[in-house]
Image (cartoon, rainbow, N blue to C red):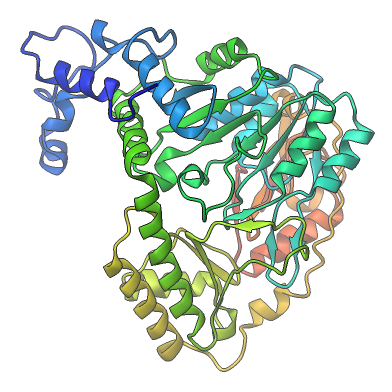
Length: 489
């Protein structure tokens, strides 16, 4: 039985940071002695004494046999995995490694269109062929949810040779689909279910939170421990269970996408965050849920505002559970766009959201938030509703509801082929029927509209132009003003 009180990696780092010796190894600042004074003034020198490299007592991330191995075993037990890998390049490298470990050139992988850009990078690196599924979409709220079991079943019937299914659980809005059903369908074809659980690392520690991906039947899940728990930014974990995943391939794939000079500050923060949750997770999540419930209740009572809640049972197969620590507030009833509301709250009322879309603002309430934070959040929305409300919906909101969001997609080349193909940059109006050579992802709704290898169509071009007119933001592509697009020559 593993002792979750232990922090083997953190303890080893602490001991080595305090050990008197003459350092003739990287990093160059030599435990803070050579650090820039402005940076030392900001952070203090103590943190740099622990910024160490792969010393004998600190193990090796790519071939762990000591304290890293011990820390990863403790993490696997705490999160319900059979094996866990620490990630210092964020969940991005975990998603890339998951695809590289399960798919080769020409292999098919089934995944939703609202995947993170890391999944597209995984397709480019592996040469896999994406079979994209549209997630369930709520046209009233203008929010994409999860893919449904039926869409996965239909895709596997059409593509029984697929090597894996990848899904997002939860979405950025905290929405969870029926992952257990998706796992059962996927496993009927004896292929693994890969889960981007970047925003669900806390699920395993409280019964009122959605079912963790591993408990729902996932074979592999990637979690951003820094996003909702207490690890440092960029620190994540990859978990595996069962025998459908080749663990050696995961290790080899991670060697391709992780730094060979991993930060021990990040690694130690994973060890410490695991111990914190293993020992106090339920208490911390109870308090976090209480704060979230208070915010949700009070904000929903402010005239003109509403919050995202669970639909009636069975009403939405792409929305089967909601992470209530994720708060999405619809502000269109105030006659404001989410972008306008975000700017007012941030610049004038001292409240900063995680992200904004045309109708909504979304907030992450985590173990680091306080009662004072919630009070300021509620007061901010109270002031927003009283002092910044408009009598009518903005023209942008009215126009957005009339946009045709039914788009035509056709993959002509694999993402890898298109990415490495000779390309040219053309004015947007000249790109119809050409093959896209870059990712084009508009916010809202945050789903890639074009990916490398897809044919550009009139419907897609019109949609992107309308998004821009309405104040949306285009990301992923070379020219975010969208005057030009990169296409295969």
